[in-house]
Length: 369
Image (cartoon, rainbow, N blue to C red; front, top):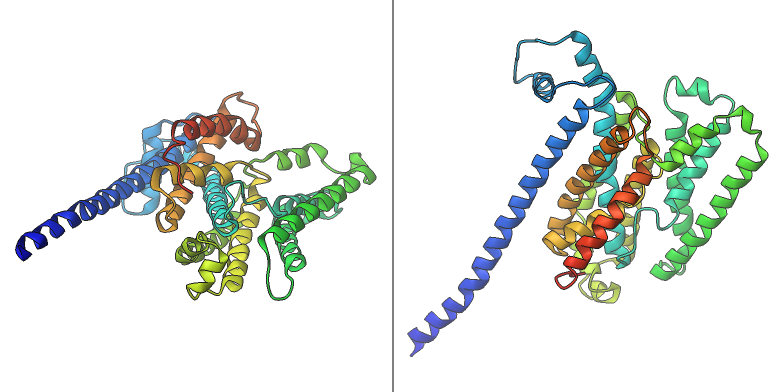
């Protein structure tokens, strides 16, 4: 009887073990597919432009650039210059921005326990926009831009200053209630938008490029050299590494702040770390892309539908998905009405919203927050 009971117990455990194994394999398969799609979209995006470059040539040039392959050059030398100096900074920039915004969206949604949270929820966008507006009206912006883009620097600074200001206002008695943080973000966002409008109204429009500012605010990868891209890449890589170390914290916060504190978690300290990490990622992204919306909201939800709410699997998948999403969006924005270029922020909203709503409607029964 005892032996039969043990066999029954063993058979009862087998389905759970096999289920976890199948889930692990399916997650690995999704990661492999996402990685392959990202590499394909990067190569594809590099091949399109005013000068059409065949896909196989792009592949050979990129493989030669790794130093591991040595294909015989059967193309003009200017083609390599176009690939490495003109197109690759934009394409890699789009991938970095998409990954940064997606990871930032996961962090804010996990900390705030709000499915509507996105990287711009507590004032990052308005702070970056105000910084960019100031950069456009300063008289020495052109001179400074020859060394390092002033718009990028002030947008990054404006976003970070805004986040710390909002967090400082919301903090009271050693605590930062989520509702207070959201309300402070809404109020500060309104004030900064008003200040931006005031600057545009008072400053003579003929003295700065209003159209260039509009293009920045509409969203687009504003990088043409490797120097600013390298600076952004450092911030994004470090931010993602820190975000991956916070996956268990985010899973604990999903139970509620009180339950997380009962588990021994220093809730307030980790909330501050999450806010700083997500804000740095967002600030780095918007400094070279302007205000690209919808990526940080849609991508985490799509990946959550595919992989579930576990942040250990959700964060890397969101980074890959965000990179793919924005790289494809930037490519389509450049070729749909070529030679004109659509604002990529408008494109992500117009294309991403219907796709997400369709996916959410089909999967609404399986959605888990």
